[in-house]
Amino acid sequence: MLGITDIGIWSAYLLCVLSTTLCVGYGVLNWNKEHVYEEET
Amino acid sequence: MRVVITVLYLCIIGFLGYLGFKHTKDSKDYLIGGRKVHPAIMALSYGAAFISTSAIVGFGGAAGVFGMGLLWLTFLNIFVGIFIAFVFFGKRTRKMGHNLDAHTFPELLAKRFQSKFIQKFAGGIIFVFMPLYAAAVMIGASKFLENSLNIEYHVALFLFAGIIAVYVFFGGLKGVMYSDAFQGCLMLVGMSLLLFWTYNNLGGVTAAHEKLTAMMQNPQVLTQLSQAEAGIAPGFRGWTSMPEMFSINWWYLVSSIVLGVGIGVLAQPQLVVRFMTVKSNRELNRAVPIGGVFILLMTGVAFIVGSLSNVYFFEQTGDIAVLAANGTGNIIPVYLNQFMPPWFATVFLVVIVAAGMSTISSQFHAMGTAVGRDLFHTEGKDEKTTMLISRIGMIIAILITILLAYVLPQIWSGAIAASTAIFFGLCAAAFLPMYIGALYFKKISKDAAISGMITGFITSLFWIVFVHIKESATLRISEALFGKPSLAQGSILAWVDPIVVALSVSIIVTIVVSMIKKNDLHEAHIDKCFEGI
Image (cartoon, rainbow over all chains, first blue to last red; front, side):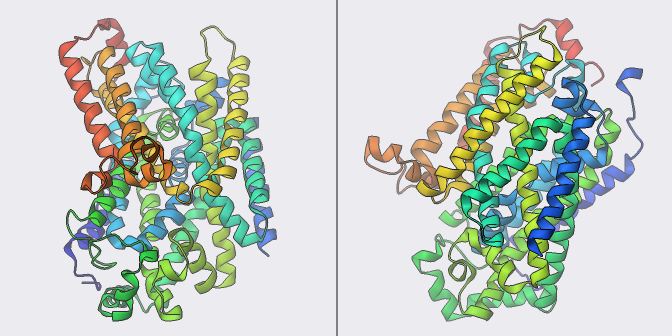
């Protein structure tokens, strides 16, 4: 697929995309959470 | 054209440094940006400080030799360097830093374990060894500037160091982070264009990969790979395949490049301090997606383009990349100058300079604060004295860095990659077990933290000087004392990175001492550390 057959390289490609998706998903889902000003606690 | 664009870029950097200076009122502003930095600025600054010239030019060139296996490092950079770092380390670091009023990474560890020794020792490691890493980045950026603007190396070096010194000296961490964010944006645009251009010129994603895979069927390529100048270690199976498991090539790729840099990033003082610059965890949540995408586009593109450059070089010159460019470090610069449109090479020159500047400015700031806050700070000193000592420390660190950057290329050909690996490895082995313990384990004792730090530091140094052949052969201390470049010469151990051994030893020592010697810190202090966590 996409000209690459080695499973090791494919896994790396896939994990790069998945981990970036994880970062974006985490940020979007928690965009307004945990907003506590230290001074206001 | 190149000079005009470079001058325009430097003017913007100068303005952002001035902005930082105007916004810096006290030592809290100077050291940690007043704890009120915008999440986008924080994320871009973290990414730009993380990704240096050596990541793009050095490791991009390494991908030209090792192939796409380096994408495992991109995965670790995103998953460990961003997600784990921000979510599992960043939030606790920010809160604990605020609870203990810590302004630097060594100060955070020292206040958590109530040990001045930790602060002095950690500050000492930063002040003594970080100039090596800073010099490595500076050599890469200055050489690029030398080739692109046709100026002497020492002129490029002083120009580079002088500009950074001014905006770090006056602007503090705010000046550094404002300019980092601007430089990060430039890097994003430049790398996106580079990826598009490379795939487009090779006929698309699939066609490009197929051409790279097919190169291993070419007898001429196989002949070139066996030449000593190519520097290809046994076990290489092609640029779109992982090396043979447990071969020298595999060990070097996995232990040094992937693990060494991928894990080492968690305990980098100049990156950890950025977690303490935001006012709440919401800012860290918002920084995660920006950081993830940034790192994917930086290292992912550098490694893919570095690998694919082999197709370009072979089609145009009949040689594989490392032979055509005459060395790993030249692959990306030569590729850009020969195969990209002239306007793009000019834009990318600024991208490379930005990558170097954003990392070095953070290093200068970390070295300055190591002196002003960690080594010579005493309670009760006023704000201005702390800032003055930090600035004096910074000037000393800058002078040491310039001296190293001037001397190292003349006496040490592999200085860039080795210096970076040495600092990352030392930081991980000395700080990481203690840092994890500080954030997650209330029962870890002060003695355990100190024991782990010292054994990690000593083991790492021993492995670098006497065992890991990449560094020990260059340093020649093992050769002088024992008559051979590595004590493990001929064994696979000579290729195992110091971080694998030293970090393991450091973790074991920290756990064992913690089990033997119970925590003697007051419960009230522990409660204060973990308040709100």
